[in-house]
Length: 459
Ligand code: GAL
Image 1 (spheres, helix red, strand yellow):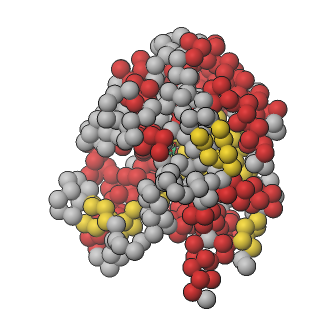
Image 2: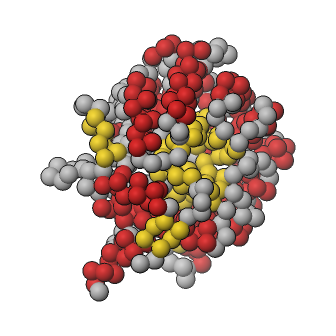
Image 3: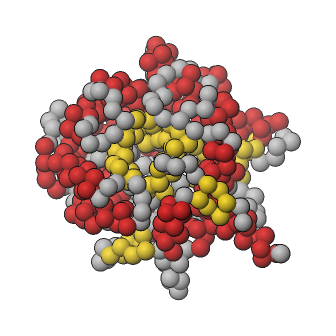
C-alpha cells in the first residue's frame, strides 16, 4: 500500500454550476439566459433535454447543502445565474440575488465554505444579443455583476472564482458551436471572446480588492495535457506545442507574464482585438490562486489538412478512455509540474476533476468502480505533486450530483450522488462513500487505482 497523505487544512469539496443544477429558469423575475435559449433550439443538445428542471436545486438547495455536509466536505463550488441578477441591462433584480443569499446562508449553516463562480458559461440574453464576450463591453458588464456580488455577499463569501474555463467558453461558443451562440470556425470572435474574458478576470480581481479583498480570488483554467502522437516526430511535437500554446499558455502566459505566447501571436494574433497589447499589463493579474480543472490528455499528429494549427487529434487503440475522453493521470501531474517549474509555483486549487459515466441498462448506476479508480489515480498525482513542492490547497470533485452536462444533456453523469431526474431523488454512489472516507482520513491508498488493480490482477 502506498499511503499518500494530504496536508492538514487541505480543502475537499464538490462543484456545480447554475444552469447545470438549478432549474426554475424564470423564477423570481429571472431573465432568459444564453443557455436557456440555446437548449430550446432544436438539435443543440444530444439527448434533446434542457436545464429547465435539471436537479431542481433552485428549490432543493437546503437538501443539497445538507448532502454536502453528510459527504463530509468542507466546501461547495457553485455559480450564479447572471440573468437572475441582471434580467435586463443595468437593472439588478433583488429577488434573484436573494436566492444566492439564501444558498450561501444554507451552506454556512451546514458548516460548508461557499466557493462562488461569477461566470460559468451562461450569459443573460440581453448580453448575448449584443454579441456576448466577442465584444469588449461584456467585460464591463461582468465587472458590474462582480461588484453587486462583492457588495451583497462579500461578508460571507471569501472564496471567489472569476471566470470558469475561458478557453472552453470561447472555443465551444465560436469554433465547435457546441455552446451558445453556436457559431463555428469564427476565429475572430473566438479570440475576441477569450481576450475579453481574461480582461474581465483581471478587472474582477481589481474590483474585489477595492471591496476589501477578503479571502481569495482566482480563475478556473481548463488544463488539457497536449502531447505529440509520436514524440520522435518533430512535426507532431510542433503540432502538440501549438495546441498547448492556444489551449493552456494563452491563459497562463497572460495571467502570469502579461504576454501571449509568441506562437499564438505569429499564427493567430491577427484574430485578437485591435490594440490588445495595451491591455496586457492589466491582464497580468493571476489573483491569489489559480484554479485548475483537469480531465484529460489529447494527442496530436501533424496534418497538412488542418488549417492554421496543422494538428489533428489521434486516438490510438488500447489507450484507456472514459465515455468522453482519454484517461491520463500523468496529465494531472504534468499540469501541476508546469505551474511549479514554469510559472513560479503559484498557489493553486484543483477546482474540477471527475469521470463521466452514462447510464446503461442492466447495471446499477450507483456501482461505479471506474470512477473510483479514476479518482484514485488522479488524486494520487495531486498528493505526489504536493510532496514535490506544489502549493496545491484543495481538490473539488466534479460534480456533487449528476446534472445537466451542457450539450450532452442529462445522460452524461458525473455525480458522486446519483440524481433520478424523474423523482429528484438523490442517492449515494459507491464513489460517494469512497470519497467521504478519503476526506475523513485525509490520505489515499494509491494501489486502489487502475494501475494498482491491473497490477494485482496480473500478480
Ligand atoms: C467542465 C465544466 C463543467 C462540467 C465539466 C464536465 O468543462 O466547467 O461545467 O460540465 O467540464 O464536462
